[in-house]
Length: 109
Image (tube, rainbow, N blue to C red; front, side, top):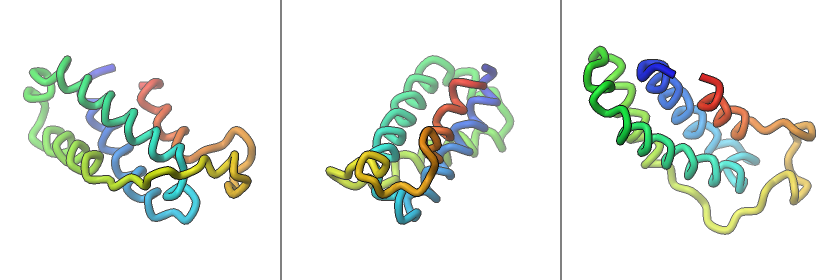
């Protein structure tokens, strides 16, 4: 995966998670908490391994990278929330999760 595509993916993902925080189900789901924590860890590892390459990207992509970091770090995660599927509250079909599907993009790029 190229650094540019990684930056774009983290930018996308950070904004999806920010928006899903306001969702009445996803915003109170353990899947969101776990996915945000995983994304933060992956982003930190990506930056540690590819920071020099990121600094060579266009100013626009560098700005997206900084914004993605800021958004992910700024997300306020609820404490002790259940998985909405396991609690019987999620309205999505079995095997479908907006949050987990979004996180999986990082593995596909």
